[in-house]
Length: 208
Image 1 (cartoon, rainbow, N blue to C red):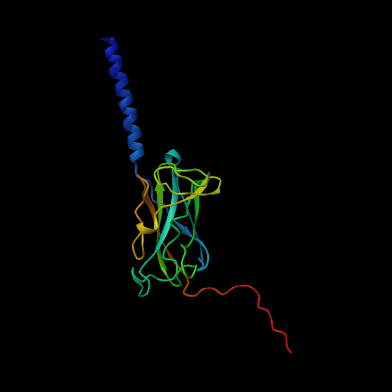
Image 2 (cartoon, rainbow, N blue to C red; image 1 turned 135 degrees about the vertical axis):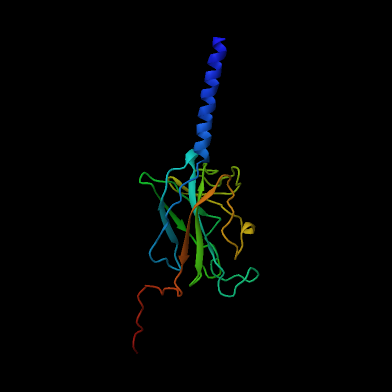
């Protein structure tokens, strides 16, 4: 009888521990406050940062911005400028010792090669509770993405968060591909209405 009693105690302890782990894993993540660079440039990358806790199992954060309905452009006739950040080469970021996460958003390839002047972009921070399919090697053919990702710097890689056919202007934010992903922050980016001229000095023409 004693050994049965001990088994019951051990089983109860194991079940309690498993329940505690399950509760911890299911605890929703806290919303983050996203900080945007003061003056984003139409022709440059958009930089965002926020403070967040480290995610379990090598989890990571990434950001995406998509263009809100812009002028009279439609899905059949999209604008010539970047309608979103580049979802084929998206930064994966990790919380540093200070708790800060910094991410750069690159405009997707377009005819103009830059963001839409005067465009409003809707953005979100995604939290993925497990490690990416590869660490810093290229190409990467691991599940579940089967897409290449390239090392950027120690602790940060790039990856695919949406294929071209999975998102198109003027849709909203893309649905996460990785299981268990949640959105922990929203933000907006408004680009200047005019492209800033080059700061390169002008060359004076010689008088005849």
